[in-house]
Length: 377
Ligand SMILES: [Zn+2]
Image (cartoon, rainbow, N blue to C red; front, side):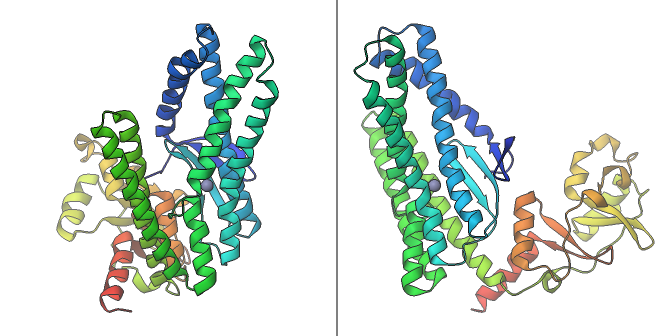
């Protein structure tokens, strides 16, 4: 769901990104502050003061969300679990953490630091508010207006994230506690994600109730958050089950080895009609002799306009070898899955001695998991 986004820099070695949906929510919050909240609370403010306050508040709000996520990431990295990136999107922030924590205590610390950070930030903003609220100048009023809203919203974020439903921080705290008591990560995840689903459904029902009682904007918002929580809870449990089943297995076990190598000067038209349509294969190593130059997939084919299929060659349309993601035959399947989803690709070639000896696709992985779960293994 959160692939892509615009990189805005790095902090502590972590790539920071803005998802496209973030721009929408940034504009919406700025507009709501400058157009509704500040005019209602401070009717004497000029239009430019409201707009300035709206923008500053919005920027500081997302900076607070970013600090919350950064604290998760810093604690996680300290415990030896690397963090790839943090993406801000329309419901807040999300950290791309490359693997599950190793012990319950690690997860507990990593999860609890987020809400604590929000509560501390909220406390600091409200502290400034209480210092300045009786000072009778425009500058003081301008600052108190901003910090009051930020203080309350950060306290709210801290409390909201403590709700014990996975994947909220509180759900992770709950999972770490059950994990610690039962020593069983799968069971702990199942319980925490079920609580997460219940929380999600409650949000959806309250949202629908709001919509029918006329408070439709808040209703839609709550229902949307509920829907997101519910599907994230289901998704994270499934992902864990999949990781568990893939554990201890490597790429060479599931790869399809019957790769057909196509010559670089073959036209797209020839490839489609002579190879893809009659074999159902989706990707082809491109090369001459034993040398592999790149990989041609359905995705590459679709990039070429139809009327150029008879003139363009696979060499021109393929992904060249040096740009290709690939894995070794002994690569763990869980890390193959991670490579596929991090790069948003459907298959990855298995390379040994700079030769493509097979392909692992999402389908291969799903089949592997499916067959094993049918057999109860
Ligand atoms: Zn958090």
